[in-house]
Amino acid sequence: MGSGSYKTRVLVIRKKALRESDLILDALQEDGSLVSFVAKGARKPTNPFASRLELFSVADVCMARGRNLDIVKEARLVDSNERLRTDIDASAVASPIAEALRRCAQKDLEVPHLFEMSRSALLHLDSCERQCMPAITAAALLKLLAFLGMRPSFNRCTVCGTPIDLNAVPSVRFSYESGGAVCSSCVRTLQTISLPSSTCAWCNALMMMTFDTIVHEQIDTNTGFAVLDICRHWFREQLNMKLVSLDCLASWGLF
Image (cartoon, rainbow, N blue to C red; front, side, top):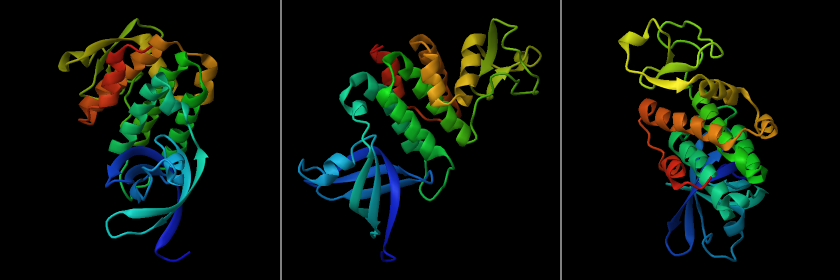
């Protein structure tokens, strides 16, 4: 292989039309960085790229370096995740993961473990029962925040560091602006909202759980959406990022 080409594994997170038959694809590389590249002829149904570089799919690719965008020369499908494109519920819960990755990942900036976490989340969404889907998406978003160093604090005061026993209180004062839970001593100085302690406990648990465990626990849909709502506000307040697909998921009433 020449110096002008390279191999990598990618997770496709966005597709854009380019001319009559080509596509520009945004993808997460296996090192956690973002890459954009051209797939020539991929809009033609008979082109092999059309089925190997679908949204939410994982593929091993060989790329040629280009002046502005690299060009894919070969692609071998690894994970199809077909259900995430053909089932409306599965597509709705997978879209916030793809959107968050596209907006948070950066070119040439490696984020260890981000690729495998994201790949695992989509694989589980592709095969799990419907009721588990919101919890898996919520866990993926929380883990993404943790990888970026932006994880919320749920069981420790974000101001003074005092531990908060989530089993001892029915609700927790929470500040999106300040970074998480706030103890009774610090609450007077901040603008906060009240969150159920059980929801905060689930947020903590989902950040630590594997996706296999989440599926096994069969976390109910309402719990998953309660955590997703916290994620939605967190991205907006802490990262100044409105995830359109997450807003749509909350308002469509699919589940």
